Amino acid sequence: MDKLLLKSGARLKGEIDISGAKNAALPILCAALLSPEPLHLTNVPRLRDIATMQRLLGEMGVAVTTEGAAMALDASDLNNPVASYEMVKTMRAAILVLGPLLARCGEARVSLPGGCAIGARPVDQHIKGLQAMGADITVEQGYIHAKASRLKGARICTDMVTVTGTENLMMAACLADGETIIENAAREPEVVDLANCLVSMGARISGAGADVIRIQGVPRLHGARHAVMPDRIETGTYLCAAAITGGDVRLGKTSAAYLDAVIDKLMDAGCDITTERDAIRLQAPPRLKAVSLRTAPYPAFPTDMQAQFMAINCVAEGVATLRETIFENRFMHVNELMRLGANIQIEGSNAIVRGVERLEGATVMATDLRASASLIIAGLVAQGETLIDRIYHLDRGYERIEEKLAQLGAEVRRIR
Image 1 (cartoon, helix red, strand yellow):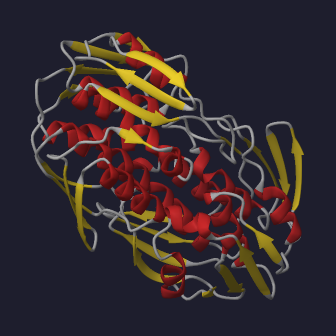
Image 2 (tube, one colour; image 1 turned 180 degrees about the vertical axis):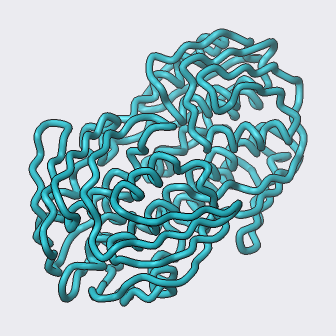
């Protein structure tokens, strides 16, 4: 199992490019199921989750070809509307095939996702929404079995804001008979990127990015070309890495348009940030100021950046309170940060972080994707060497992270 070894002392400087967004690419890959014509994508990140989704689509009869960050998906021979437990257990985003399969094939058999390290992610909103559109759904032997000769437009109000639920229902509604209205919809930029791709395929969607989305069903979608949006969480992660080291970095092929909450907090911490149309530059002070935050659905502060900000608060001046409102188990990185010398106290859904003068290197273990990133950020300034175990989580969401960090001057290497 791979590990990552970091040595402290480097002040990150220079320029790197940001990859395409994993959380946008995964549903967009599933959108290929909706049409018998090819979908051509660019800026697709090369990640473990993307490779898993490729294999899953391949099992269904989708022909997938890749060349660098470009990908072509041809679902003209779609013949197996099944997502097995073996595939879904390794990647919860596989539930996103449910809506497109049902809309295109009239039937889908998709395994229920397994447990998630950072908390429960129920799929009941997906099922309730599809049932409102006329689907006959049963859950048997751990599988969701859905049938519908053709889905019908419906008004759907989800009980909670769910990104994958919004995406699944939006894709299904594209081929439904009549108009579908999704209320309490997720507003994340990745939902908008999926909607833009679907519109380029011939879908009729309005309101993406707001809490009410309207979809007018069409009989058929066609092929299209689409560029996946830049990864806002990867962008935020490298900004935090530069900030904690007192660095000066420029991130290209990205945008500040989706990062208002993150950038505001980094400026509160003392960073100077300038933005261009497709780039962001951060210049950090020698020591950051502590910043408190509360996670919430977009456009508020993203839960996927909570762990990274906890890391920078560990050595910031002052005391910060981080409140997690999305996932109940998303403080598992706390014990590992404390192994590096961090002063953190957990009180229910709040983490109180008191900045210390320095951290010390140690062996730590990654527990999930964003926790892995927080340990890297802390390891950049922990005195001596930090060895991070179980970094397979990183490969799910960060493309060539050790290469990009090294490009900015970090002393980091992968141990296989």
